[in-house]
Length: 400
Ligand SMILES: [Zn+2]
Image (tube, rainbow, N blue to C red):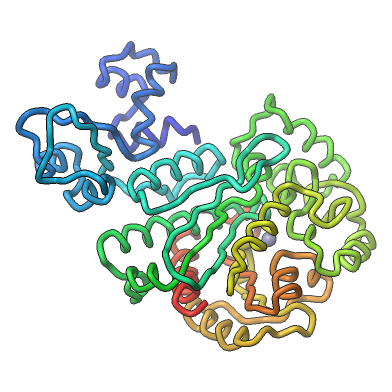
């Protein structure tokens, strides 16, 4: 799916040419520069608006299909009762920012984050690093509390459905904070005051783009990945791709008995860069794993949740290590999600992010394997996955 298709669908236009006609542009049916400028608000979900005589928040909200509350939230430094002509306002548009029925690419993620930051200025969005191919590793922080939790998604490329899970949670949570509402029964304001949430919604943007089509054949990295895949002809390309574009499995790249992981995976035949299960040349050899480890070191979260697919299970131990409180919280995660709390199979028990977090901190860290079937999971599973994962993510803010 092309991004412009999402935009024209939101704009209610049946074709790109019809969208162009409505915007007063030449109806070429091709997304040229002027057309992109008109499409962009339908992707970022907001516009800048210049106040004219007679405007009120209610009138502006009605005109753009939004609410007075959304206008107040997006313009925290403006007085709604003292509008003046030519004042510029940020106007959120009247649809949910995060789509849950289209494949997520790095570009879509970046547009969504720009949009959410405009709608909810209390979110902080920054890059904690950059891939070898120049994609930024986005981190979002929300909340004022002394407790800290870190959620991440998509260490593995073909598990990208976890990206919209975290992004929708972010949007639902931010909206609830702004409306003084609830998330999974918890007061969002109470969570916001109690806990600071750090999110890394797409740990592996290079790999995700390979699987979701954000990376085209002619783009840097595609041919290199294709060549690495030749080493493993039995793994479907690109659907079977889990690694980053350098062929390193990022969730086998952390210093938690990494040598043990290397020995196991080499014995299984994963002894060269490829679509999955190659541990890399050294622990934290990759900018993605290094960035997530660095964020963890700077923020020292009390709890981490890493979203993966699939299996409907929650892993919570590293070897025989059971951090204090981890079993109890894990059992509550299992109860709210219906996922099973399990021990990791021995052969997958080393060098993952959760493993490293538990080993170095002895604090609760979980890998949650959402959904069932074969990766990449279809978007038809999204609603069920989100309904089950929401309880975990909310409970983590309340108890982590
Ligand atoms: Zn995974």
